[in-house]
Amino acid sequence: MQAVHSKGRAVQRIVIRKPGGYSALEMVEEPDPKPEPGEVVIAVEAAGVNYADGIIRMGLYESAKRLHGYPITPGFEVAGRIAALGPGVEGWTIGEPAIGLTLFNGYASRLRLGVDGVFPIPRGLTMAEAATLPAVFLTAWWMIHRQLHPEPGETWLVHSAAGGVGSAILQLGRLAGVRTIGVVGGPHKVEHARRLGAAEVIDKSGEPLWQRAEALAPNGYHAIFDANGVATLADSYAHLAPTGRLMVYGFHSMLPRNGRLNWLKLARDWLRTPRFNPLQMTRDNRSVLAANLSFLQSHAPSLRAGMLWLLKRFESGELAPLPVEIWPLADAAEAQRRIESGTTVGKLALIP
Image 1: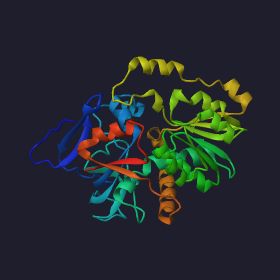
Image 2: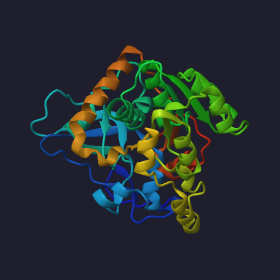
Image 3: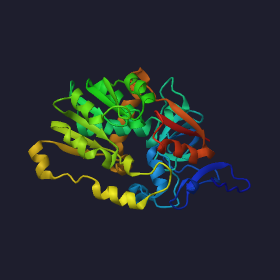
Image 4: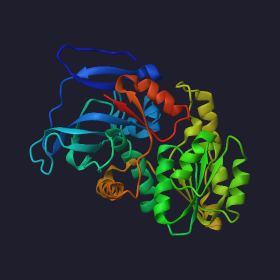
């Protein structure tokens, strides 16, 4: 990763000037940001890394193109301490620990943010744990409590159960009284999924996924959470129970694990992606729902309410933070390489 330095500038930020591989992540130094009315500046002590950040780097993240454009700084979540208060800001003091939920710009040592996106850190959480909970837990909360509306006793199948959103779904499912079946991609992820609430875990690297899934829920699943894309979407839909819902929030299997796009494969996978027929869905009494937090800015009050709901349960111990793998901010490229490898458990964080 390149580094650009300017004398007298102390704030570090990762910038993507144009889409590309890992070398597109460039470290720059800038002046300290000044808060506008209704804003604060957070001195960032940890920034969450999400799979979506790599898709932004590749130039494929739709909200990055539509809502921001390039150059762009990735990052949806941070934790740190309040460093400055803009005019009109009340309820916060300088030096107070805080979580920041932002639309991009998180890979930085200081972040200017509207106060509605700032939240207190629950007691007992480290900065890295706090920084890595908003995006995944809020995505899981939105799907479960704004789209799915769970009933106790349901059975869910959770793909990528050891990843960030999958881990959050397991915990929220446990609180909702449902039976969750986790799907993981390696034996080192099985215990993690069990610990977070999975009643059973399918390790698809060593056993047939759908044969095992059918044995665990012969009548189908009330909900299946799928971020894989073309690799599993059709089979996920086929394994829904009557009135079951397929919850889509990503397309990981369509993207590379080496940082370089294969446009031929991407086009082929796009053509193979299921197109769900509303006539068939009506006949089957099955639904397909989807979520992307970055396109939900019009629902900001509801998202804030969801964050407060989640933080209350972290405070009480009903929800637990995920294991976090730590990387320096300057090694953002290596952190993205790790999360794209598919071998990580829980979350990753960058430390400025």
